[in-house]
Image (cartoon, rainbow, N blue to C red; front, side):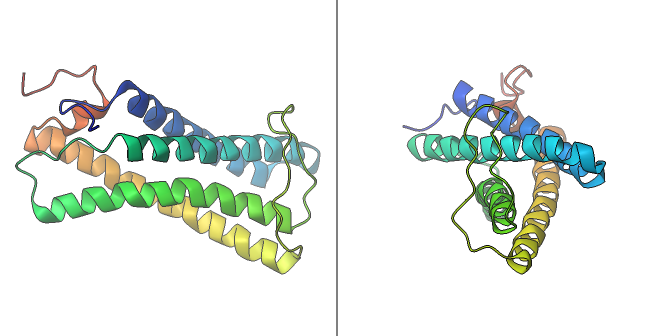
Length: 185
């Protein structure tokens, strides 16, 4: 069952933009967490962890949806190298959207972080990873590197969408922003 040619499904669009907003917000919360006074750090940490695990869960839902509903076909005028970059960017996004939260969660768990309730209400257990400050720092460093990679891939993604909209004048951007008028109509 392939997505409609003219746009992604409402579910795909909703997951796309919800995950984007949550990743953007969580990057902000992570920065606040790093800079917070000691008495505020735990509150930001709990929020950052809660949103990160939400991103992980929604990304798993999104991956399941994507497997059941393949991408719409590429525009006929896309070259092979553009198709490879587009598909590779999307696949890399899935890896990063799941890997970054998992590594952050594992880093906190390895560091002996207390189990914190998600959004103050849901159980927020630690992952079953070995305890150790060195492992925690390594995993935390990998988490931060993946977050930086998200920024790079996001930049490529946005540049690609803008190229399609302004230079190619095709429907690619319209598939994820259905309120825009489709240039093909």
